[in-house]
Image (cartoon, rainbow, N blue to C red):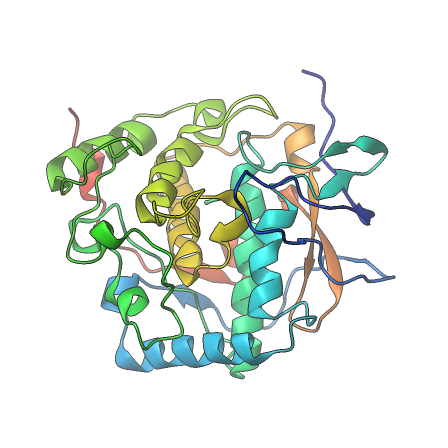
Length: 330
Ligand code: C2O
């Protein structure tokens, strides 16, 4: 394949191509006449992302308050819960076009831009939440589903009275039902198995050595990180809905707070994988691919993959936790 980065055209966003049975919805963000290029944050405290199952009460309350404020923003505010959820739809269901390609729409899955796109998505989402509660140290928790203590939907997302709750999830997979990383949609709902889950993560993360296999190839194949992550989507979504909404479908998954906890862990696994001495992709079409996000000041910003490879430069890191799957060879 020739090197040709995906560049999002901010002037060209149309109606999404939704799966059958989905309620009609538009996914493009509010318009903006100006787009600025991303600049790395400076002089800011580091945000430490922690496991969702082990958050302090203080941090749980901050997270709930921030989501509550996000949900209270007017629907046309690009920082609102509604608009943030639509970002996933805009980039996955044929809404945005590629710059210079009026016939080609963007889909950020099934290829190596999966990891950087979602890293950027969470970066802005986290900063918007932090700014709503006036806390520059606010960090998104991660759903630590690769650790035995995290192999169920974290309690903070399952409390019905919480703004982090979403009713459209699989009723048979509520805590304490154990995650099953081998689950596929046709399975009967049996509980997962810790050892099997660890072996699966070992195989999809630890045993994968080559960047093209981990991240996927340029616009050709999904990597093991993305493949492993898919199971959590289909496992969490509500199977009584036409497309496994919310978590089970691209256009709707961004509506569930659980999505951001899940992706925080996917993003973390990228950093864990690199800690084994493995390398990022370094081809130009990867590094120069670019996306658009509204920041916490409601300005539209253009970001490039090459600027997100180091989380410390982006101002956050993951609290180190055990990786029991590292030695769980089958
Ligand atoms: Cu854009 Cu978890 O998918």
